Length: 197
Length: 197
DNA sequence: TAACAACGTTTAAAAAAATCAACAACTCCC
DNA sequence: GGGAGTTGTTGATTTTTTTAAACGTTGTTA
Image (tube, rainbow over all chains, first blue to last red; front, side):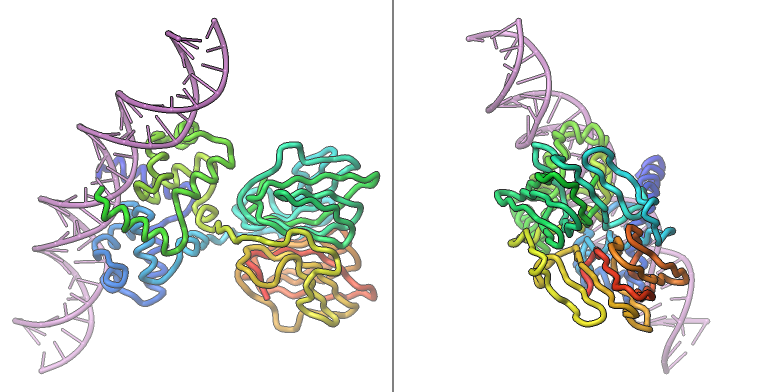
């Protein structure tokens, strides 16, 4: 590998502050395994693990999975280990971040940026407001509780109107749509993982 | 690539039910991007994306990261996604599942069992109620919005009393405690990922 | 109908990662 | 001190992935 590529690779890793090599070394040592012992369990060579840990090559997903199986650890767990240093914990009502204004208002709990796994919203739908004719679809799961007013929620082929105290929960991959059919504004507290918008 | 290796690769993917190709295709299409458009944004060729999506090769972490940057999406998000088949979507107020009864009441939105990534709760703290002297600590992140009454929330060294409309968000690994200091019951809608309790 | 553009797929050559086998450094034990 | 065992690292070769450029299909337009 050329030194140009080495630095390019290092750059790539620096982008997300996610250092595959350092993390692998960290979890391997945490379990008290040598490179060779892990290699034996994973069915790869010790050289492979050495090179990965030094970031001298970037393993394929297939081989990284083999290595992690030797620990054992899932790919999701491996990549989920990021510790977003969290600053603010408490948010006054007027501090919530306005993601969308107008007939549909989404006010987010928590900082706008930062790599989080959860999104909590205080939603407000004006009478007649609608998330749109084309259904929403995205990764993850979402749920919520209706505080005031009524909302007509369509999920896949199912449709229902919910009132105060009622709730919903579904995988966000199903096409979905929110509409306020009534004369009164509707308020919802919702959560979504991973964050959308 | 030999057909033996093809099946071996397929086997590897089947182990965790994690299909890199299918997932990439899914998230790409969810964002309305063509293979070529994503390739352009990611700085790779369209052929690469085609081969990955067909599981005809297993991308290196470096190149998968490049591709995901074009979406954009982090590696952690990519590997965290699983698709639990969901049955019930709508939940009437009286259908919420009572997880704990008494001074502190947690009523959960969504089915009790099933492998979910999100937990949405309607919480109610009687006057003086408390989650306990010993602080809570668990994996994940949590957030919520106060509906009625007041709650005294302690997170790490920080402590604050929140009222209606106020909110909180923190990594659940920090020791935390909820206490209702007032003469009035406190209601909260909260969310937590991954589910706790 | 033909021309054109966009799409996903495929093939041969170039680039990168995995293996195999060696190397130096270190500990332990006699 | 010397030998056997372990550790992590490194070069030469093999295997796999990525690229670049083509192919076949589909939908649109003149």
